Image (cartoon, rainbow, N blue to C red; front, side):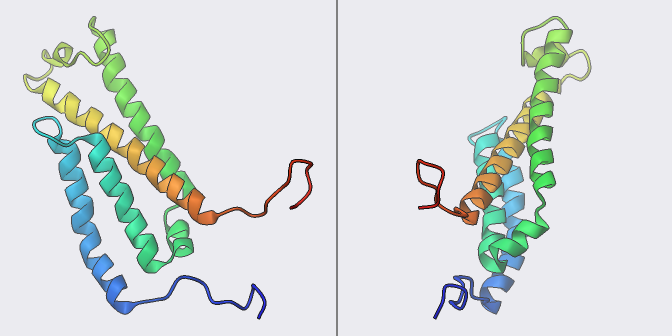
Length: 157
């Protein structure tokens, strides 16, 4: 039996696929709750981002890594990371433009009296987007494995 004839590690399971399909929206909602709740209590962008990234990994384990990789395009992951960085930078640099320090949320109080709370929540959402995209990207990178091993002299080992 050659390496091409060996069965893959992925085995379809109707029970797992159905369970993941039902549970995933709730897990993603919980991730958003943790991100937004970080302004007032334990939680925040990092924790919520890890949970959101784990949701995509859960889908990959249930439906297959290649299927999920096709569904979650690389451009979506890059846009998620870029959007998170831009959100973080916009909130921080906006405070500087208003005469304060980087991420000095009370500079936004003239717009709305709870603007500092919403600024913190937007920063947490941006951090969550960055963490989720990095976790998903690393997962797909590690799942791809090595195409081939190269020795120190440029030849295949």
